[in-house]
Image 1 (tube, rainbow, N blue to C red):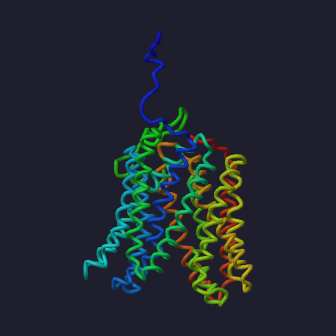
Image 2 (image 1 turned 30 degrees about the horizontal axis):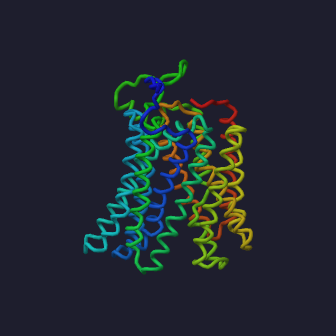
Image 3 (image 1 turned 30 degrees about the vertical axis):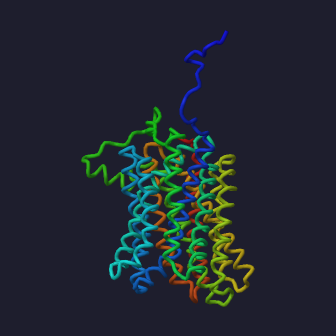
Length: 424
């Protein structure tokens, strides 16, 4: 006699939820696709704006304003994410802005004199999308990686991110070489942009954790002090003055390390100017640095989960070594310096962020990531000015100043990492 299954025995309908590791990996693939889009745009933005009639000053103002927007606006968008509990919505909106704005650049050569203005607006909107999503995205990633190990979770995400970071520019370069034009490459970037949004849709269906509200602070956690007014409360939130002191000290240490990590533009300028490398070979060296970043993120992320935050003490040591190598007169030593630079940068952009999640309660993480990015941005600005002023004719002074900054960063890190923390 045929038996019928009881309701309890009937298999559940609908998609099965993904495991934590699969969720983290899928989120990394979203970043890979989006990085192909916006890193491809950033690699070609200068020549493209020039082809539309922009001067060197115009290009500098547009691209500089874009990077400023991407960092400074995070102060507000981080607070927005935490107060509205819309981490997922802001993440999707930010990625959608990138997926739409960059391919639309392909239209600008065909709209006459308005092309330059429209292209500038699209670039600035794309960078705004980066600011909208970044704090919320990092907070979501910290939540997803709680059970996998935050060090490994951020490392996997960073490694996949770097795949997109160098494949996007290479794709644009290949299309430009074949067609002799830049705009077809932007149109082609609509494909990875669409893939990033499709992956986000799958994440919503298969990983309910991405849309769940953040947990409230654990019992015993110190609540934020009541403010005298809504304006004062907002000001404290935006500046991060109500965040834990350990986080503030760690952010200062990260800013000092970032100030010492010169941009690759300064390093490549010296390589070409000193005749050590042809300009055409610079992208290959940059690709090497990107690959090293990915490997460093994976390795240190694993060590972070097993050995704790003390692994971060290696970063100021590495940063102090960079100028001693990259400004040498032997190419092999310069390339070794680029590898060291890539390792330091990889840790700085992955494992360091994993530690932020351990220092700040879950409901305040997006705010913390916004403040952290802004402080790092100030460090990068100061470091860029320092390197630009001293790299020509004053390399020993530059190396000495960077070394002093890293001694201070090491001392701050040593103080902060003595405090045992556990993920919230």
